[in-house]
Amino acid sequence: MSYKVTIQPSGRSFQAEAGTTILEAADEAGIKLPHACQNGACGACEGRVLSGTVDYGEYQESLLTDFDKEEGLALFCAAKPLSDLVIEAWEIEEETIHEATTVQARVARMEKLCHDVMGLWLEVADAGKFSFLPGQYVDFLLEDGQRRSFSMASAPGADLLEFHVRHVPGGFFTDRVFNSMKVGDALTLNGPLGTFFLRDTNRPVVFVAGGTGFAPVKSIMDKVMAGELKRPMTLFWGARQVRDLYLPQLPAGWDGAQAQFSFVPVISEPGPGDDWSGATGYVHQAVLAQVPNLAECDVYVCGAPVMVEAARRDFLARGLPREHFHADAYTFQSASA
Image 1 (cartoon, rainbow, N blue to C red):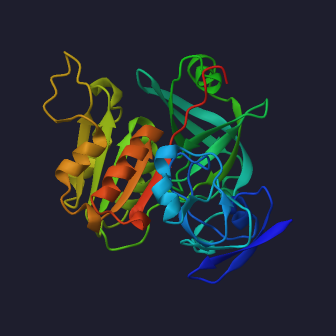
Image 2 (image 1 turned 60 degrees about the vertical axis):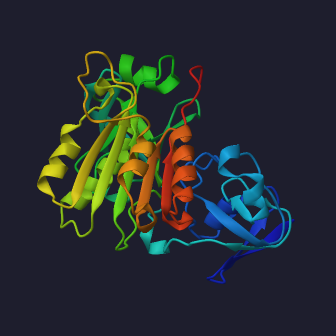
């Protein structure tokens, strides 16, 4: 059985097979809806069900409350139609998104960026066939069929694809990166994936990064810094201690080079030897304290799901419109995976 799903305000429609999520069915029909994590952890795919019924699927409960459901909201990466539907969703122009493809790559360079983050630079075979938007990610396809997702930290057009890999002790893939991977090793990638990229508006931009959530922001800013910065942009980058804030010289350099760019590092638990006089606490709380006009901004949040959830909740409560909140939640595999 299949159901008809009609999108408002565009009026476009597509068929969704029973048991298929709205996001999957739209993608199969060539219709691009906003998304990031694809597992109900970030809220990027949130939309409204105007008529019909859905199975809400599995998701982070804090992202979709009973009140949200009463208001017609659903996460389209998790929700499955139980009848014909009319939904309200923002559509991404087809020419904006590059089709995902599987490509072969080899490790061209490795550099430890801090005690638990490895910089990984890959050379892609037939690189001309692989295009992406700054902020998107790829899946590393492992030999046993598992996947690991990482955002590009380099801008399109760079000679090598750059990634920032945080070590999860006991992690199937990150242990390999830190303990046995070497220059010349072959890897298989599938992408680009996700819709975490800079929208073309006139609104000030606030980036909120936690840990290696800095990677997609760096990709975006590498592209932005190659041209003229036409609107104010601020990066709030949170880490537990100063030693966890890898590559701080990069955003500090952007701050010095562009009057419209500001960098605010935030340390949640300064160590005794950190000698830290900057912002402390949770990174999203620093945003609330320092950005009085949040409702007028475009906000891009990338990091652990708990940080993304807290930012979404508190930013929307401050008046940020849902359609101007963009997120990519980094979910980590279990150590045994």
